Every structure is written in C-alpha cells, then in structure tokens.
Image (cartoon, rainbow, N blue to C red):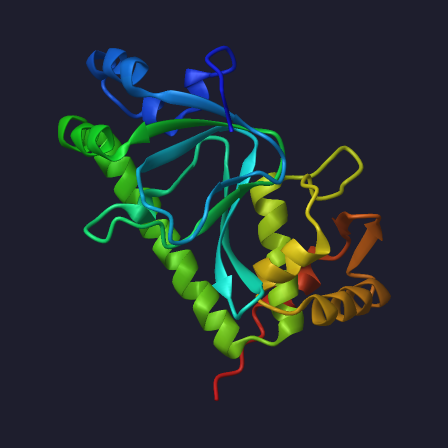
Length: 232
C-alpha cells in the first residue's frame, strides 16, 4: 500500500461523516490515507490488529479461510463502508483477510484513536452499532444458507446481492469485475460447481454472460431460487 494525502474525499468516509465537527481536526491529525492496488492484500487473517480501515473509494473483499486452500468471502466493503473492526477486542488479531478488488483508497486510524472516537462521538458509535447489527444478520443468513440452501440457490442469491450492492452498468451488467473463483467463494461453493450452476442459469435464460460480466435477465425467478430453503 502506498500513502497518499491528495486523493481523500471526506464526504465518502464513514468516519468523517458521522463524527462531530469538533472532532474532525483530530481525525485529520491521526488518519493515514493509503492507495491500494487491485489484488493487493491489505491484511491477512491472523495478522496483529492495529487499527480500522474506512473505504473512501473502490471495493474490498473481506474473507476467511475455508478448508486448506480455499476462502469464503464474508462480505464486500465499498465506498462509505469499513473493515478491520472485527479485530477490535482482547485477542488483538484480525479474524478475517482483506484484499482490494479494484484500485481502492482507504482511510486508516489506529485502535487507540478509534476507541477514543467511540467515546467522544455518540452518533458515530450509534451508526457503527447499526452497521455491525446488519453485518451480523447477513453473516447469520449466510451460515444458514450454507447449511440448508442448494448451491443453485446460493449462486442466485449471490448474484442478486452483487447487483444490489454494486448496481448495473449502462448495458445492464452487474457493475463489478468479479472472477468466477471469487463468485464461488462468495456463494460458498467450489469453482467447478459454480461454473456448472452458471451454465444452468444461462440455459434457463435467467442470466447472460459476456466474459466476466453477468447480467440478470429474470430477477424474479432468481429470487425464487434464493428463497428455496429446505430444512432437514
């Protein structure tokens, strides 16, 4: 990562927009802005947790180890979001890894300043609590789906979630350049299985493909697949 002070937009920073105006000079004094290349690892699971990152522009995949050589993408952190907060607490290690999906700018503050910010800024603390509550709901839903939802449904839900998060291009494709391996990691399945499921969705005329780009043709039917949970 490369330090840079000339590409920071305070209007896109979760930390800056939710803190008191009186606290913003302190943010300016303590923050470090990093420019991260596509594919660059920001930190790895098990690294000492030194602070919190706020996404100013770009996107980051947040993931955990899954089996020996695989990963499970927990979520994506986009502009206005944050990551690294799971390292807060007594253990002092990041329980997840983070890698930039595209050229990304992040704002970093160390743990001591982050904790001081929580004590001084009630709105920031409230907004963070709201964010973490929603994150927990999504994590619980993902674990339930891994246990009970067929792979085809998980792929359909992953595609719908990506479209909800990243929007679409002018041509109607999901507005993110995501590899098939990352899609498999997000759906919680193997690359081979996801490849097969994608072909089935194309044959069913629910999606169309153009290289790495994916367009949802029949969102209603995809939603039905994503809701097809059989409890045993």
